[in-house]
Length: 104
Image (cartoon, one colour):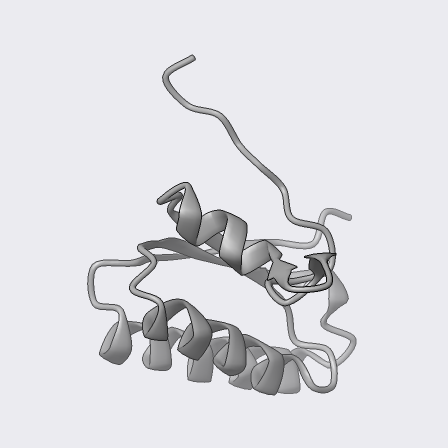
C-alpha cells in the first residue's frame, strides 16, 4: 500500500512495554503523525505536551485535527481551537490544521 494509517490508542505516551511507548514506535519507524485533539477540559495542556514531545524527537507532524464534537460550549471551543491553530502555525508552520465539525 502507498498509505497505511496506524492508530495509537490513548496518546503518545501509552506504554507498549515497560520501556517502549507509542511515540518510540512512531519514531523508530519514522512515521509522520496526525494528532487529533478537541476542546474538553485539559485538552490544550495535553495537546501542547504532545506537540512538544513530537518536536523534541524530530518527528514530522503532518496534521493536527480538531474534533468539534466534544465542544459543549461554543465560545470555549472556538477559543481553544483558535489558540491551538495559532500555536501550530507558529511552531509547526508546514503542518496542516483542520477541523471535524459536529454532525447533527
